[in-house]
Length: 245
Image 1: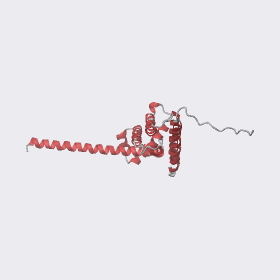
Image 2: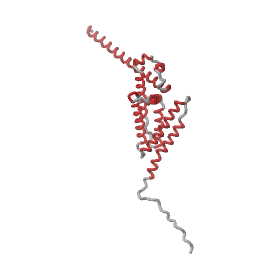
Image 3: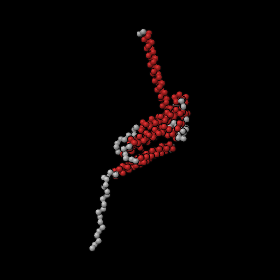
Image 4: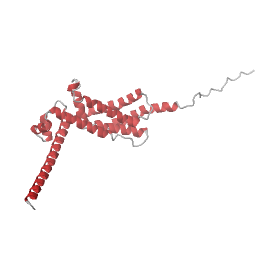
């Protein structure tokens, strides 16, 4: 092997090591970012947006504030990453809300259980905390504004996927949606307010019953309206008894 070939071999090995080093460094960087985002999400969900300090986030993640600044720069950038993660999880979980059978009962069960999974998670709680804490901020200073609209659009899309085939008026659709999500929202608030771990199986069962009742009324009305046109109820053929002569 000539000196030139040996030199080329050394250069190639050095380049391979450099590429491998950059790959390992990028992997470690991604892992650090994940730890910080997860820690920030948990701190916001547990303590609220105002009290999710950088000190708590650093302690929970095991990353120094200097390291956090290196990866994110500011707390606002961390919040943006938390919102992005929450929306990604919301979109991923919403795709699992799919009917397992064609019965209305089955679709209602899938909707209630799937929607509860969407909102009963740290990512959604963090999103809710950020939305509430910025609700009086002007649009240019509100990081959660565009996420709020996208979350609602995802909910509507999941709803239409399950119940779009029903013959419902806009008022009936709005009422059923409000019953569903105000109930689930109240359960989320209860889980925040209480210090124990409440059991929500009962409320979820009641929600399924109420939603099934709301969605079944239009179907009954539609079935009743399928009578042939012009057909009326039979008239009574009874007559008064004749008086005796």
